[in-house]
Image 1 (cartoon, rainbow, N blue to C red):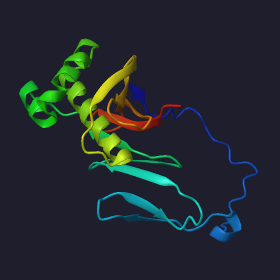
Image 2 (tube, rainbow, N blue to C red; image 1 turned 180 degrees about the vertical axis):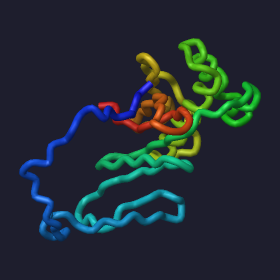
Image 3 (tube, rainbow, N blue to C red; image 1 turned 90 degrees about the vertical axis):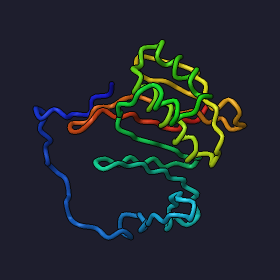
Length: 179
C-alpha cells in the first residue's frame, strides 16, 4: 500500500526564493480551462497547438488528475464492502474468473472487486470503449497491471491500493502505455 502521509520533521528553508507575484505572460504559461464534452470527457482549452489529454476522477473527499500527450484514464474509488454475489452482479459473470484470480494472489474480495471496477473505468476513459475484457499481465506486491485483451491499443492499467491521511482505503487505477 502506498503511504501518502508526510513527515513533519523536515523543515523547508525559504532562503533566496523570490515570491514576487508574476502574470501568466511573464511565466510563459497560458490560462488553461477545463471544459466537459457531452460525453462527460474533460478537455483542456487554452493550449494552442498542444494536444494534451486529461482524465479526472473524484469522490466526496479526493480528486485525481492525469494529463499527457497520449490517451489518459484514471480512477480513484473507496474500497467498499460487498458480498461476492453483489460484486458479480456489479461487474458481470464474465469477470468472475478474473476476480477469483485476484483472490488467489491475496486480494480481499472487496479489493478484487473494486480493483476490477477501477481498471475498467480508467480504460473506458482512455479508449472510449464500452466492452473491456481485462487480463492480468503482471503483479508485484499489492500492484496489479491489466491489459484489455481485445483492444488494438497498447494501453494497460496499473492498479494499487492507497491509504491517505484521512478516510477509507482507496483503489487507484492509472492507464499506462505499453512501449
